[in-house]
Amino acid sequence: MKGNLSKDLKLYQKAALFNRLFSRAVKDAQENNRQKGIANVYSFNGKTFYELPNGEITTESPLK
Image (tube, rainbow, N blue to C red):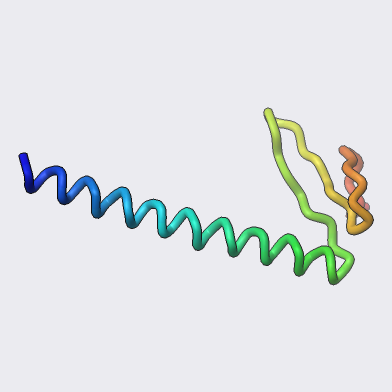
């Protein structure tokens, strides 16, 4: 049993590390888009939302 707990803990720690790294990367990309005037695109419950550089949220694509 001890070996399994140790293995589970290491797996959890790796998952937590990846979660922190990926979350930071997403936040950096979002901020980079804002600085460049590019909309951030999100999907929630199958619906697409656009966050415009001015902070406005819309369902209308700004890419037309």
